[in-house]
Amino acid sequence: MNSIADNIGSVTRRIQKATLAAGREPGCVRLLAVTKTRHPDELRTAAEAGQTAFGENYVQEAIDKMDALRDVPGLEWHFIGPIQSNKTRIIAERFDWVHSVDRLKIAKRLSEQRPASSPPLNLCIQVNIDDEDSKSGCSLADLPALARSISSLPGVTLRGLMAIPDPGQPERQLRQSFRQLADALKRLRDSDDLPGTPDTLSMGMSGDLDIAIAEGATCVRVGTALFGARPPKS
Ligand SMILES: *Cc1c(COP(=O)(O)O)cnc(C)c1O
Image (tube, rainbow, N blue to C red):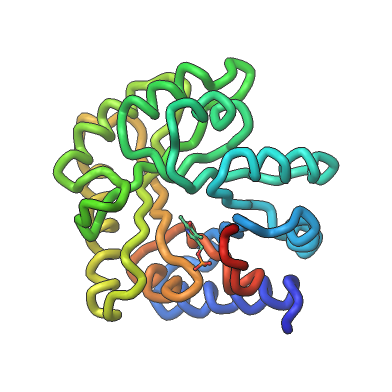
C-alpha cells in the first residue's frame, strides 16, 4: 500500500500533467483532500506532507477532527456535504469554505451566523448538472437569480460553482457535464449585475480529475486516490 505522502505526490503530478496538457497556467488547480471517514492521524500525516486544504461531509465528524488538529497551523477547512439548516451556525463558525450551498435560505443563515470577527465565508453554489431529481444542487435555470441574491449577503463571498456529476457516466458525457458547469461560471462572470467575480470551479474527484481539469476545474476534491478506499459507512 502506498503511503499518504506518496499518494499526495502522485495526485499532485496527475494535476500538473492535466494542467499542462490543457495549456493552463501551472498551479491554477488546488487539491482539496477529502477526508470523510478518515482518522485524524491520517489528516495529520497529510498535513505533514504539505497538504493544507481538507474537505469534510459531516459536521460533527469535521469538528472532532478540527479539534484533534488544533495544534497544526494553517489548515483550511471546506464543507462539501449536504447542509441541514440546524447545522449552519457551527458551519459558519468553524469552516473557511462551503462548496455545497444550493438554496438561498442556507446562504442567508450562513451569512447571518458568520462571526463578525471572521472574514466572509467563501461559498460555492452546488449545481445539479445531470438534472436528476434525487440529487441536491441548484438547477442551471435557477442559478443566475440565486447567485445574485447570494452576492448581496454581507457575511459570505460567492466564490464559484461546484458539481458532482454522476461518475458512472461515459467519459464523453462526464466531459459535457464539466463543460456545462464551466460555461455557467463564465456566464456569471460575464454578467454585469453580479458584484464581485467568482473564480472557482470545484469539480473532479479521484476518478475524473484529469477530465475536470481539462474542462477548467480550479479545485479538485480527492479522497480515495489519497487515502485509499473508504470503509463502508456503519
Ligand atoms: C467523497 C467526496 C469526494 C471524493 O471522492 P473520491 O472519489 O473518494 O475522490 C469529492 N466530493 C464530494 C462532494 C464527496 O462527497
